[in-house]
Amino acid sequence: MPNSIDQANLREWLDEQSRQLGFDGLRITDTHLGLASERLHEWLEQGRHGQMEYMARHAQLRSDPSLLVPGTVRVICVTMNYLSPTIDFDHEWQRLALPTQAVVSLYARGRDYHKVMRNRLQEFAQLIEKQIGAFGYRVFTDSAPLMEVELARKAGLGWRGKHTLLLNRESGSTFFLGEILVDVPLPVDQEQESHCGTCQACIDVCPTQAITAPYQLDARRCISYLTIENPDAIPVEFRRAMGNRVYGCDDCQLICPWNKFAQRTALPDFAERHGLGRTSLLQLWSWTEDEFEKRHEGSAIRRIGYSRWRRNLAVAIGNALADSAVPDSDKGLLRDALSDALRTSDALVAEHIQWALDS
Image 1: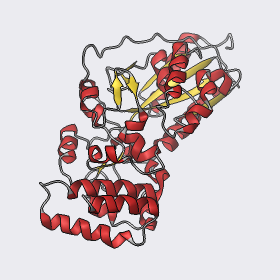
Image 2 (image 1 turned 90 degrees about the horizontal axis):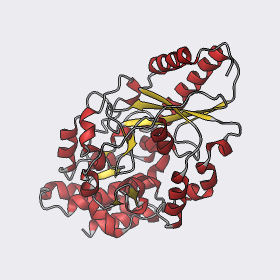
Image 3 (image 1 turned 135 degrees about the horizontal axis):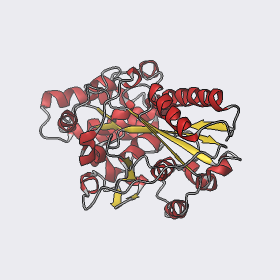
Image 4 (image 1 turned 90 degrees about the vertical axis):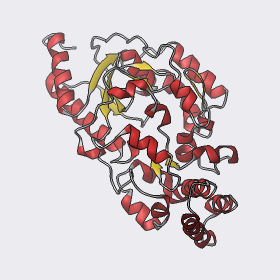
């Protein structure tokens, strides 16, 4: 670091600039991940990553950020809250109990966070460069083999909850993470203590028991993995547990006591689009592929493609058809919609449609 830069003043400046760019927390850590890399390798050896082959392919890079970007000695970690002001957790629980409604994970209802975070991180890095002079850096947000949660935990942005997500006192867990890897030896921050205590609400509420023990997640059972990362058929043993969740799952966050303190974002980017917080399964099923592409333009959902989207919807509709609380008239509409689509659907979707019709 240039001698002319006062470290205390620089840190105050970093905090202020990060807030102006819309970040809600900033902490700094070094690149040493210690036991976390060993736990990652154990998790991979157990096959708990499912078909996320990229996790295993870049395991060594994940273990050491300085291998990902040579010369890196510090990681600037930031958070960005994503809950829009209209979100109400009680309402979310109520919608999960309405079989014909479609539930999309809270984080995915607005713009794709990758783009929002990456652009702001790049702008932040350029501002830092103007302040201290040229330096080596790269920005990331869920876009490279980095152990983001572990880096953020080590930096002091929170502690790992028993569901494996990062928690902090100010925002619960409803925030995105981003990083700037730098070659400047900035002072590092202290870790936080864990504040989960004996609570295991997240473990108890998980619909598929994907949280197999405190701090242990089997992705192969997780509804977020099954509906997003999994490219194949959803295993039959997990289809009923999916309920009406068609993209991701928030149950472990909705139940977490720390999310009573979840902060709302002022950023318009994460505002709900296309009624994704109040739409029905039948409405989403009616979308053509062109409508799917157009309405999810700039959304993280678009990444899974139309076929997986329809696969997920077919399972949720099948669960509605099997629910005695759904009126026969509604079931008739759902069955007709599935039957009409069966002949023209690809093999993946057709298999799930048939399962739903047999419900």
